Image (cartoon, rainbow, N blue to C red):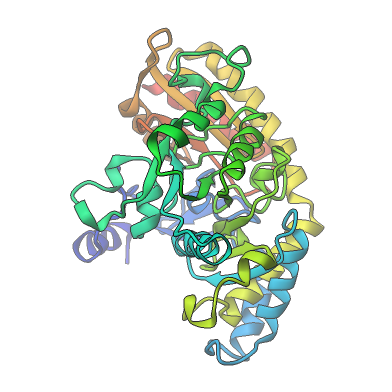
Length: 434
């Protein structure tokens, strides 16, 4: 079969899941930070499957771990114990920060978020005798596409036409978006007003019965928004004063993506609950909720379960993935390569007036495009044109942001310096082309 035939079949039979539409590319092979399409063309992959493929495509050690696992057992239920499931839970408890020590496995990030909310609400009932009626999330955040996860997501395009399917009980606060500060202030003179105003938000916009505050350490789909270093400590302090837990959504920032094992480590804050997916097994479908023993103990056996959560093959892949990440120190390499990207992108911003802002940590980088730098008018059409021009030249990137105008650079963490510099050249040529 050729690419045209596959594209026609998917168009005919698959329900579309992206607003921008798929690239006219049929990916059939990948190695490291390079993928190849059905026609034999190679691409530098700075998309990485929505920033999931952290240790690269088809890492030989993970391939071997999967091959060995599938020859033994594919799937059993939670009525039995399995080896890789236990070893993976132990490893996650070892590497996650603070008092996080108990793990619940599930299939995808949205399911992890749903379970994190259950933990928080159940904790408030059993520990404090109150229902935990509300959750505070942030405008522009993305937490998934299941019912409560979508309610937490702070963007209306994911909720359009869903009416009462989307849960009530979620309050959205203004985000720590320095480039487009909702309070029209400048950092650091602002004194982190975006965090301190949360006290007023709790007093004026909630019932006071808050189960948890959920936040991505760095916004992913929301446009690679990096909060000021003081934001999370101040925000979490305020919510804890009101008895709320802190849910740290590490679905995209976890496992080395930002230059540290977990994005929250940039802020010196300990989560009460953490959600994991994507990089936990570099794209193999597995997710997890990690919490403290105190919080875990409020849940009974029938309160949570996932048929494929803790699947032996997936856990074997995730366990080897984490070993590779740690042994090859890929989070440190992400920091080094991220500096190369940031320096190159800042140079591009001097050449191309479309670039309004460059931001990120490690290999989680955003380029916000604007039609006018002074007015900061979003440029979503130009962002998609750049995306397609880059694809023609052999580079895959993603587009996101609250206004669809942020180019997202999130390659596998083992991308080479040569590949990074070539990606920058392609981006430069793509800007020139439009």
